[in-house]
Length: 203
Length: 203
DNA sequence: AAGTTCATATGATGTCTATCATATTATTCT
DNA sequence: AGAATAATATGATAGACATCATATGAACTT
Image (cartoon, rainbow over all chains, first blue to last red):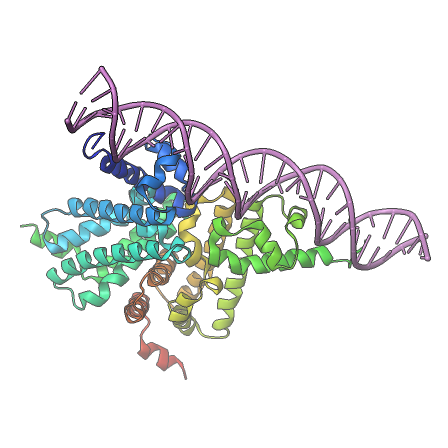
C-alpha cells in the first residue's frame, strides 16, 4: 500500500463527517457532490472512488448523522435513572437551542419531509435510524414504569420532532419558545413525569 | 384585449392548481418550471409572463396549497359543534389516508423540513398558512371550552403534523397505523375530548 | 534511488436547470 | 376582412450538476 495504510478510510470518514453537518442544513437535494468534497479539502473527481453514487453516499451520510445524534443524546443523559433520562432528553430535544441549530440537530426534524422524495436506500437508512431511537426511548419508558411503552414511544418521538419542526416556522421568538414549552409539558404529562417524581428520586 | 378577457388569469390559476399538487409531492427543489408548465398544458417559456421568478412562484403556489387545504378541512367539519369539529378534524388529519396521499395533504407535513432552506417569501407564506390554521383550531378549542387554547393550539398542530410525518417513514403498515392511532388518542386526551362527551352532545 | 501502485486531481461530457429574447398565434376592434 | 395587440411558443444561453476517463503524485517496496 502506498499512502498511509488507512488514508482512504480516513478521507472517507472526513467526507462523511462534513456531509453530516451539511446534509441537515441544505437537505439532500441542495447538497452537491463538489461542495462536500471542497468542504472536505478535496476536489470533486475523487468522489466516486469512495461512493458508488450520490444516492448511496446520501444514505451513508444519513447513517452517520443518526449515529452522531444518538451518541450525543446518550451522552446528555449518561448515568441517569430512567425518569430523569426521559425528562432530560425531552428538555434537551424540545428546546430553543435545538430549534436554532438544524445542522447539529436531529435528522428526523431536519429531513422528515424530504423522505418520501428520496431514494429507497435513503428511506431505509432513515427508518433504521428512527427505529434505533425508538428502541432507546422505549427502554427508558419501560424502566420508568410507563404503561404500553412500546406503542407510546413512536408517538412521543413524533410529538417531539413535530414541535421542533414547527417551531422553526414561527418567526416570533416568544411564540416559538411557547410552542416548545407547551409541548414539553404535554409530552411529560403523557409519560406521567412530574416535578414531584423527579425531585423525589433525586435522593 | 385579445384572447378572452380573463385568459391570462385563468392560465395563471391553472398553473398554480397543478403546482399545488406537485409541490407537495416533489418538494420545492425537485419541482421544475418546465415540468409544471407542461403539466398545465403549456411550454416553459411563458412562465415568466406569470411569475417574476421561481421563488415568487413557489411562494404563490404554497399560498394556494394552504388555501385549498383550509377549504378542505373546513368542509370536512362543516356545521359541527366545536367538540365534534375538533375530534373529526383530528381523525381526518392523523389518518392513514392522509399519510398515503402527500400530494393532497397538509403542506405542513409535506414541506416543514424544507422550510429553513427556502426563500424568505416562501417561509413567510408558510408561516402565514400556519397562523391561519392555528386561528381556526384555537377558535374551535375556545368554543369547546378548552383552557389556554391560544397556547395549546400550536402544540396540538405540531403533534398532529409530526405524527403524520413520522408515519410516512415507517414501512410496516401496522406499526405506522399504530403510531397514528396512539397519537390521535393522546391529542384528544390532551384536549379533554372523550367518547362520552362526543356522544352526549350528539342529541 | 527507482519503480510500483493506489489515492487524489484535472478536465471533459452530457443532462438539467432557470431565465430571457424573439417569434408566432389567437382574439377582438375598426 | 384585416390591423392591432396580448398570450403563448420556440429557441438560445449560461450555469449547475452528476458522472467518468485519464493524468498526476505520494509513499512504500526492493
